[in-house]
Length: 255
Image 1: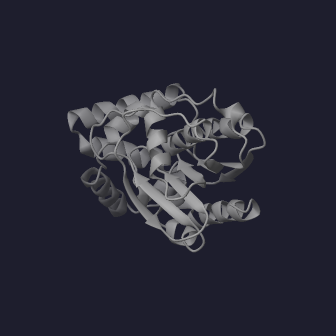
Image 2: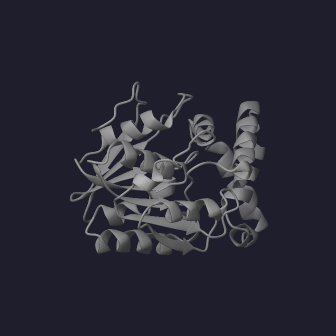
Image 3: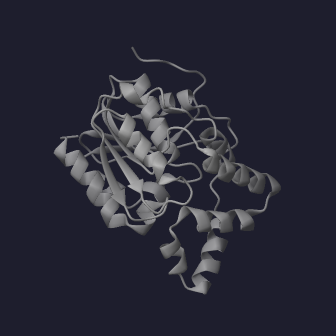
């Protein structure tokens, strides 16, 4: 039976393409465009893609209501959820609460419950955002969300420009999403997931230890596991590998 939570947060939703359903669940402090922008056109060639953004304000979020809102916004009755980072917890909770609608999961750089390092990072996020120190926040994000090889391969001018870009364009709702990540716990949901699942690890992740990615694969029955050599924002560093893994999984399972 479908579970209902209230009130559900208001999402901003776009729908692309036509065919079997895909629902996207973006990460904390991210956007649909930054997390899935290169993937959406490929998915939309053969799928109906529901792309919903979380509230762009300080709306307090809880996992159940966010998962319910994502399901409610879906353009198709049944769908596969592709989640990134925070979006993996949203995806798992949606599958647990709405098993009649979710038919597959792709969980990238995921987390079931934050470990101590993740909580420390989230505490720092919250403090920097509350103080208005956007420059320090941007420096921390660049240094932790991307792999050492990626950041060290940038020219000094590009590092400075990227810090400025991040600082100038921090998505609304980032603080509320960080607060949600610090409280999520889907560990009790994992054993009950019965749909085809792919857990993708970012093997060079400095923000969310890859042990968290592996935990999802180890505790969801029958889950497949794959690695991409990249930092947390794996789609920015290795877009082709990201695309190939997702599209191959959907094709093999006729999703």
